[in-house]
Image (cartoon, rainbow, N blue to C red; front, side, top):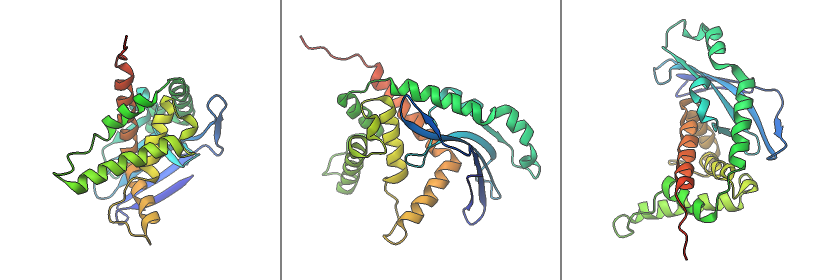
Length: 234
C-alpha cells in the first residue's frame, strides 16, 4: 500500500497499491512505478472503480501514456453496498500491474523515439493553451494565459523533471504533466496553505481521472502536430 486517503469531508476514499520497488528503464533513464488505484465514495461523486496507472518517480507524477489499452486498465461498477467486494472480477478485468508495466514501457520507448522540433513544441502549446485573447478585451485573462504558456515553456526547456527528454514526444508529455502537477495555478491558495492545497487538488484530480484525460489530450495534440506536413521552402 503506497498511499491511501479521504477527500471531500471523508465522502471519497482511495487506496493505492504499487510495486515495492521503482522500475528503471535503461533506454530512457526514466524511473517509474506501476500502481493500482481503488476509489469509492459515499456521496455518489465517484463510482467504485479500479484503475491501473503509473507514477513517474522523478517528479511524483501520475501518468497514463498507454492510452491504447486504457479501456482494459479501467474497471468501474455501480456503487452498491457489495460493489467493493468484487475484487476478483476487477483483478481479472485489469490484468493488474505487470501488464501495466509492459504497456507503459512500450509507450515510453515509442514517445522517446519521436523527435519534436522547437516549432512543433510551440504548435503543441498552441493547442493545449490557445493564444491569449486580445489584451484590450480582458486583460486578466490575457495575462493569465500568457503566464501559463510562459511557465509551461520554461518547464519543457529548463526544468530537470522534464528537460532531460526535451526534443522528444516523451519530453512533451512529461512537461505538460509536470506543469499540471507542480506549477499550475491553484485558485484560492495562499502562501501558508499552497502546498497542502496542491496535494489535495492533485489527489482529487487523480481519483477523478483528470490526469489521465490530460495525458490523452497532450498525446492527441502532439499527434495532430506530428501529422501535419512540413512546409518546405525552395
